[in-house]
Image (cartoon, rainbow over all chains, first blue to last red; front, top):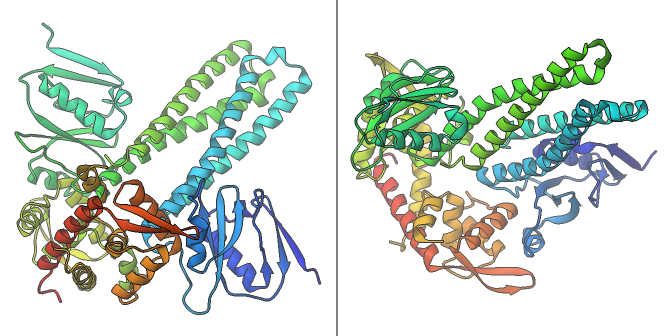
Length: 179
Length: 179
Length: 105
Length: 105
């Protein structure tokens, strides 16, 4: 029986923060745990087998939290799991009532807007790359060798798909900003 | 002395709804009036010279208003000026307190979100055109004559600029959604 | 809309929604609601036409108010039992805020 | 932030902001605010860590509350005169809502 499980692109499979939290909660309920989130966890994340636990997870994007950020959450009983890009992760074991870190609709919406903002930074970078490669192909087709052109076409298609994907992610989070 | 004044692309010069309203108000204060808005007023709008008036204008996007829409506004003393695409225009003469059609921050934000939605429809159409022309240039460069290619490059550049412009307009309205 | 859904959507309630629901304990059209709220709040709140129009649309769509009849293109509304239930819960919440704020005034 | 700007930004006030400001009439850190609000509202409102953290940041940034001191990385806050002014105006508004709702309970 395997005791590790690796999941690729988890942040692209569960793009809405509340869905990502619920997915982690289901994994923990089946005994699959992550104890640390890292910069690139959105791409690759590894779960270790353990006891099934009833955990509430929180996904909280904070680009530059104040120095009392960690202490505030910890005092409320949350355990810090690290950050994945700008998103900080927290968990708390519970029995009956599922604990909430965002207790009113304003702060849930604000959390989701911070998530959209984080995605929009990557979106803009890819959009600029799209325009850059398209510009090269359209305005300087003859100063490129055939191999160069093929590579640039592949890059253009790849970045276009990523840009559209990230655009769709932002719209989806926006549509679900209340949860 | 001229008694007509034509303004091109007015909706692109004053992209935030509150700014468009204030601009109409300044024009009216100088004696320049519009009595009807039409489908394409965002492109061309003609003011007629008249008495200077102190008017409050309202810009209200409503794709398919209920049948009591006009009656409700009229009962509050607003005069209907017609619609420019999905945006309905209203005005009211006043002396002291400037009348408001949106009296709480929720409905101001909702009005601005409806505006962003209206812009996003054009944005998506232009984005699809961009991708379509870029696809033709990238994947079928050899099946196009040189003249065709030149025309498509011009179209691509034109639609790209429009797309980026509309994207910027949406971000700007979003940033100012509270007013 | 069920009471549970309406609670999630309307509580806590904006003061605009609160005063509109409160006014519709009697049959009123949009303009009459504005006048009534202005009177109740001593002119602190003067509802705008756009705010009234969109609030009535939302409340009617969710079944908190209903149209009684129409008089020259103007709709006359009244609160429904669901609306009354939500309004009562909001009033309880306001009473709690008021109790907590005692000593401030 | 001037009183006029704070009025525009904070009135009408969300119940979260209202109870946090109310709690900070005495020196408290984040967790103590949550406990105090829970008690005041008979456990109807249980503020979350994220909500408390971001509300305190916003209120401090706008000068409605201020840090008194720090105790092992936890900040202890208290309301400022500006915060008291805004809280008092909100209490007046709540009293008006409460008066208008008379007869509902």
